Length: 306
Image 1 (tube, helix red, strand yellow):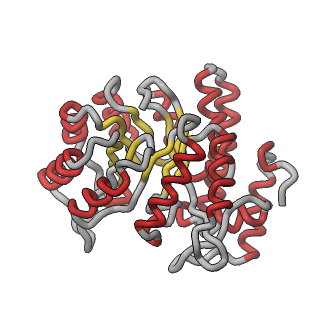
Image 2 (spheres, rainbow, N blue to C red):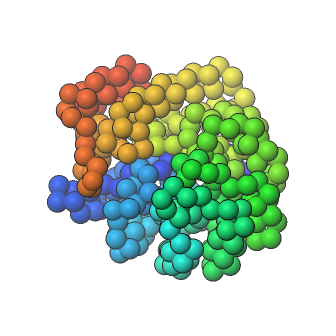
Image 3 (cartoon, rainbow, N blue to C red):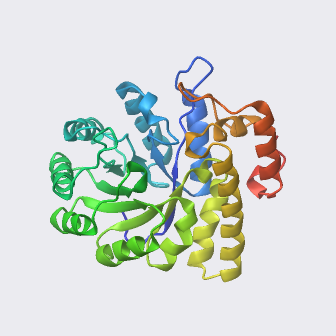
């Protein structure tokens, strides 16, 4: 991964047909939207990708399609799901390491029943997983797991293992994000997970941000990066302001559960597909409100749809 490159990474949806099968044609069409919008993608993830509902064979196929559609044009990364044990994450690594993706994300360890791993356990978990593969790797420290990875551990892993190339931080602690960037600058590519901290990440010297808003408006998400690179403060203000308006709408109508995102895309004639149990799509009246709210943003890439 290019340590000097700025980018947006979208946690891609997984398109299912009415029978609950992976809709490959719709998936390709969705990935092309991301590619044309200029955003990179995490595939088969546990959030927007509904990764916990996927079989290993489906994950293999999704990654293969992703590599065909995105490799060499935008970043394409294997996401996965939070493991209960180190053994689970090692098995996942060995399964996807030859898929051809640009990097694989090590998901946060979730030992269950709201228990949190100790620093010693986290160091052992990460070092064991890292040593199990030679694939380029992305570390993750995310508050959704109920904890963040101590900065000392991240810094030491970055120094010890050359194939650890990036780290994602998901949370609201800007001081943690700033220190993470300071400690790993020049060694790791750093993205904040969630677009709301996007400008903080860029201003502090990070490489960009992540978020599922790119599933709806990839060009808008990428416009924040292009405006920042051009040092166009007014364009940054305008593009990031609209992205935050979209983020507020998406969060209100289902967020990363994609209960609103998928039916919204369907309503606009874009590839969205169905959700897999136990998730259920929002009611049509709620989707109508979401469509109305997004249309009021007047996003050029959605003009004339719906």
